[in-house]
Image (cartoon, rainbow, N blue to C red):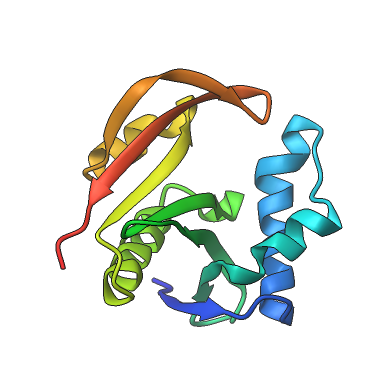
Length: 149
């Protein structure tokens, strides 16, 4: 079985560009959306985390952590290559990001989950807050998880 190596990738690097392509293909294109240059420029202050197949070196999963005030970080844009979904790599990607956030002094992760993946986050210990809302044209739920540091 192949394994993943998780690491931070630098904004603007070739690995970052790969994560943008995966996120756009999985999360934006199906909604008829694309990233704008200003949106990507705004990500310069975020952490970009990715999981790479240790055998092929290819990108398998990625996400973005956006620092917020008060010890919070927002997880967003979680994406896994379609042919690799269901193998537990999304879970491992999220768990890596939780450890990464904790090591960087964050106490809690917040996120806006698409309704279709709320169950995934519930299994990982996230709780739902508030009522459903629409973001990027589809229903979402606010969720959060306190990190054990």
